Length: 359
Image (tube, one colour):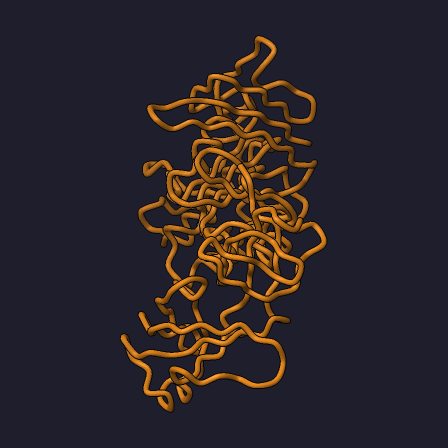
């Protein structure tokens, strides 16, 4: 069922004003820094957070707006948070059966539904166990089954993997990906781009209570338009004004790059490039050949990043905060450590210039 929503509210000095649509069976991921309003949006959709303005409809059924404000239990929404929140005195089977039972199904029918969903999430063998005898990953499987057992028209996922250990999270992510292929319309709050890429069709990025970026998940994360999105996507971002063949920073530096068709000359834009495209050279050395951007900088941080070492630098202009990925051998050869002066070099062809996000 298609979700259409507009929420506006004020809480102290924080103002939220968003509107969005999620097509039937679609998954929308909400990304954004802490305090941007992600969980507030979920609370507003569920009816747990009072809103000044709320217009919410799922499949044409009005949950809020036009004089309607259904209480949480009447909205037909499933909610899954990072904590499983299972009833400690009930078995896994009875925890899951609680959902259809609360919706009016009989005891026998509720248990049939619970057995089905426990099997769907590969947790049938835990049916008789209470939560205290389940691992974190096992508890989250049961919580997923419970969230789906009431046949919700809308599923809300609030950081569902945040409390799981590194071994359990991939399995639960894969499980949700399989379930959501034919599951209900879903809104997912996450801080992890992998969740967005694995589970969501579209992404909306919040900042200061407003949606500042939105679009297909892969497109948004491949061409971020805000520093937050660039950071979680693992990309470098430099802000400025678009020029014909690149971008001019506020300090007047020119960054050569490939301007996207929708980046208008003279208007706010961002230059985006991957850490792997940044060459780190001894201070004062220059590359020859194809057009390049060069800047002097100083090593700030070195940290392992999978098979490479991610180097972050400090410097003037566009070099400030830029990251580069180097092999351990390259780091050793250059004798890099915090404080080492270096020259950064980036091919113009590796820099994409996109319009900057606007609230």
